[in-house]
Length: 344
Image (spheres, rainbow, N blue to C red):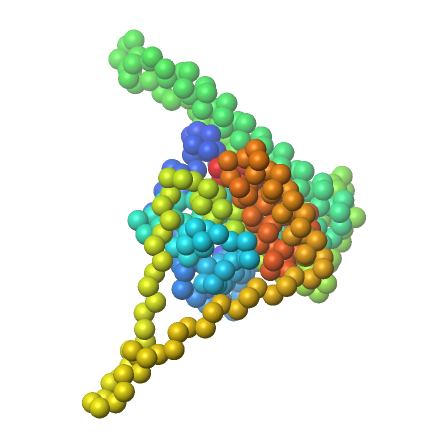
């Protein structure tokens, strides 16, 4: 991935509904050479001297994913099945401005699919939240209206296309090919910079300099990893809840190569056993209360839900046990509107 900013498109063409088009669109995008990847042990690509905000956020997500995937445990509540899936999961960052989230099946496991548009959108939601609650609420509501409108238009188009083509032969009465219906235009989600300081918007009282202040940058940087950790944990929990997905076999640890001299004792045969994993540190009082609240909610949900712990609660547990901020407005927005991002 390069550091170039992806220009926002005002119209895109969508052949079917969000849920139906995501696997096809992701497969096509990943087949192109421009698709950015963050594999398990790979380091993020080096940053050029000048890089866009989107490029910086991509590198942050890649680094967060690498640390999260390589960890012995993601949280104290992680099940062995979730841990096995997490360690075999890859991250694919799709270069499209549309905010998309999903999963992809691979020969060697599964991949969490995140678009650069979603990474940028979550960053701008954090920026809006850092300025004022009024700006965040207004801007977040505008984004929901656009995404929801796009999804409804896609569903209506899919129904119209099905009705128009059902029972129609490949050629018309005069032997002319039957033309498909024109695709439904999709609106781009609004950008925060276009609303900062603009009259008639919820962010008209926010000064442009507020986005560049040291306090705003520090707040956004301190909370960006919470959103990434929530998304990654949520998607693994979704995969783990699917009974059709086999639990990956654990990879055997490879002993380092050693030189053995004649007559020397076999140190490898008598090597001491690996030390037991370090216990998870006790959370702070605030996080302990958070854990108790989520555990009670999960227990109540387990009596009616097919999944003992829903993916959203599993993701919040990961934030609690790792002392991450789980009271973000952007996080609440993400949890409430995740269905607009193409995920199941």
